[in-house]
Length: 124
Image 1 (tube, rainbow, N blue to C red):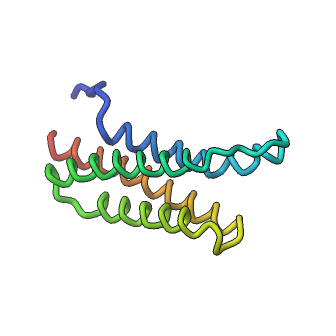
Image 2 (image 1 turned 30 degrees about the vertical axis):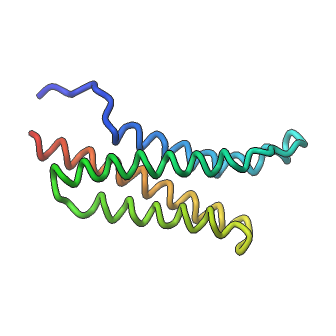
């Protein structure tokens, strides 16, 4: 069996979700280490929206091919956690916020992995 080397929406979605999680984990420490604040709150909105758009595209394409519910449930759960963490910033402490965002990003990454495997096994 030969492996396809083409980049799929799941590759892009997994990378976007992983970068989103990395951003959530690392960015709060940068102002502490460097001593400056970054006035780019709009970038967080953009990163989240791009990640959600790419993810929705990848998961919906996968659903049309394999009709498996696990990737969809994982992605919806991860997206709900990422959105609630992002929108509820002012309501919870930083540790809870970062935990919710990281778990959401990990669920999204795993959903793309599961979706890609489901597509691959469906097409094999």
